[in-house]
Length: 159
Image (spheres, rainbow, N blue to C red):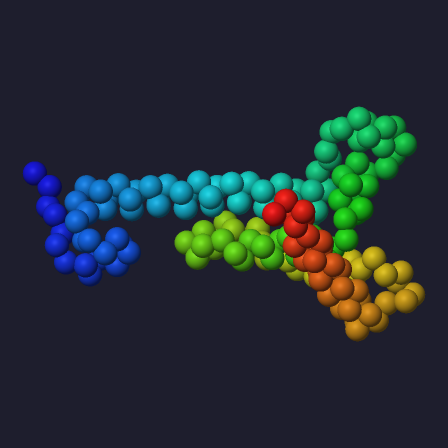
């Protein structure tokens, strides 16, 4: 037999308090599984970014094969074509995941090196002879804001 809860102290938002213990356990197990799966997908994506950005892993495409013949680092042409502010904007979206996902040590261990890499003033697309800490910072901020604005416009025509 199952136990029925008649008090509404479980904060399930259902208002009726009629959930069985089995239903509550099932809900908790589903939530836990969702967090685990989400964490796995997120860490796989962050690992890929780390490989591309920090380890300079090669992406095999027809263009990559042509680049290899001309001695151009394969990943650099694609990876370097995207502004760091855009990369940083999309990386910061990781912070929108639930706390249970963000608490995972693997997420932090992958997120922090990427954040440092993207926000480093040494990586700016501003020519070295024109760099100052304020111009580099302003360029990065402008790039982030542009990425945010463009991302907000993505689905605008579909409403």
